[in-house]
Amino acid sequence: MSSADLTAQKVIAERDIQAALKKGATEAIVRPDAILTPTARDLARKHGLAMRAGDTPAPIAPGRDIRTGAGQQRRFDSPEAEAVKNEIVAVGRKLWQRQYVDGNGGNISFRLSENAVICTPTLISKADLMPEDLCLVDLEGNQLVGARPRTSEILLHLEIYKAVPEARAVVHCHPPHATAYAITGRVPPTCVIPEYEVFIGSVALSAYETPGTQKFAETVLPFVRKHNTVLLANHGIVCWADTVTHAEWYAEVVETYCWTLMLAAQLGAPITHIPSEKAADLLAVKKRLGLPDARLNGDMKECRLCDLPDLPGAIAMPPRVHATPESPSADEETEAIVQAVTNAVLAALDSPKGVR
Image (cartoon, rainbow, N blue to C red; front, side, top):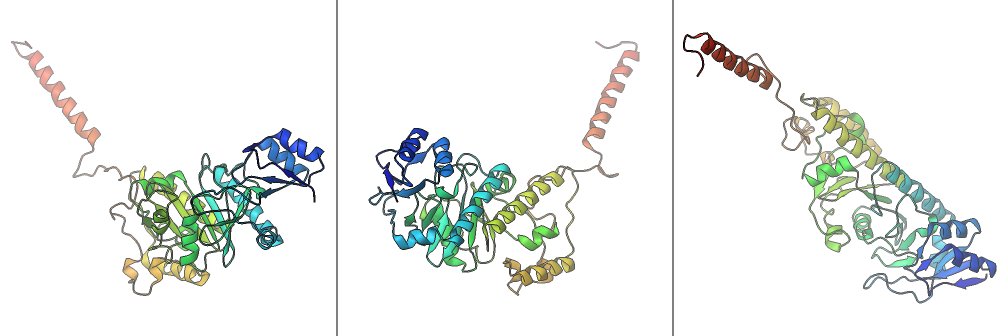
């Protein structure tokens, strides 16, 4: 295998790939923080030019060095890993297309083995993600393989993997309607739509910490055993599942649910809830599917399965007050005031003294 050494360059352009191909290179050795232009990446992909981190790369963060090794590289290039990488790329594009991420926001990971996690890199749009952009890290966050530095928020994913053995995939994103709940310190009510009950159900709201820090990662620990979706205060959401695609599904379900609740609130009528006995049927389905829910702990009474419609924070907008026979609407009150003023003016005009 012939290699082209590009470790001296931080930005790799199309001309650099062309020069490497002219020399007959089949792989390019790049620095871990190198940035490939889109045309360079496309050209390398077209001609099968592999990207590999240099043997003595610079650290991507204090204490977080890239460690390369033949065994880790083989694992990263295995058929199972390639399938996962393709799935992550596809999910990244779905997140971007649905406007759940912007700029370089959001991150995705999959636990490939007991101590190896494939994850997205930092500073790349999920719309532009390619399989060769992905990284392999251990459960402490040390990068094992990858030409790009891993996302700083991988620490959040790793805490979930450590706390929940069933978790194989994690998706963190910023869908606007679910994030609206997170930035107002509210959680959506339960027992409104069956699909949400089965796949998501009760969600939690974690405290705010600076993203990318260990403290931020640990904010979800009180919740992830009993919830597969957590609202991150002033930030976004995080979902875990058995596959990357399923974790993305959960993000879609919770976002659509929050959006629907906001639309319903604008109609001005109270939100109706699924009866408790019917909600219990949905929880039974959820239990058979092996999905977590705080209400499945065995000590919650049936009458408490659903949030009440008037639960504080249950909806994002309070419904408008409707007129009743005992309580006239604001429009009726305004009309009555206008009529009273009009009558007073007309009475004054009819009087002998007139209006002064």
